[in-house]
Length: 256
Image (cartoon, rainbow, N blue to C red):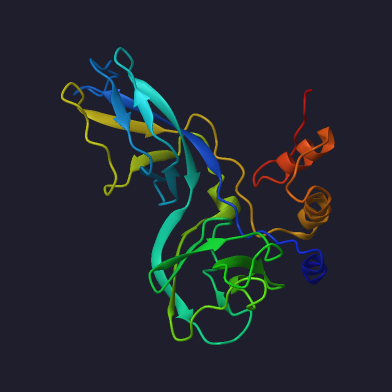
């Protein structure tokens, strides 16, 4: 099935990290919720985790407004790996380099000789000088970064180290239960304002959407949709199909 998808120029998806809403509450010295006297903004990228170390990262900034004691922020399961050396380039066409087995779908950034290359779903629209790469999953469910052949996508300069920055994730194991995400990672823990003794965190709903490497049934559903739409939405069915193709979406509908 995976080999057949290559004939369709469809890319099988690697693992997908679950998503969850994190509730942050301001507490006084007695551990009771306390209202803020002024607005407080939480930056994106706050790392929170379960007691057994499953990490989530907040995806946006959020403000806890004056007169309130809590705010809800969306987070995604994953742990960032920065500037990992995954190999050295040569002069071959379609060079490929293996990624971490826990690589999270659509999270890869590639740098070669201090130049950032751009991710593409396909080389179909890439020229011979375009510094593009794709991610391809093989029959063993192992993800690889693949470069061009000099006609569709550039061939990297020989003898350069390939650095990968990406997120690794737990797949279905990241679909944790309610009230299990209770800890800040010390590296990104926010500093409370003067009137607050500490912040507590929890997830009042379970984390959902975490998936393993795309299986046969999902390939059978997604590959034809990808070919039919080519990531362009014109008809109502196109809008349903492109929405369904978003990682983590199970069903979709359109109202016109």
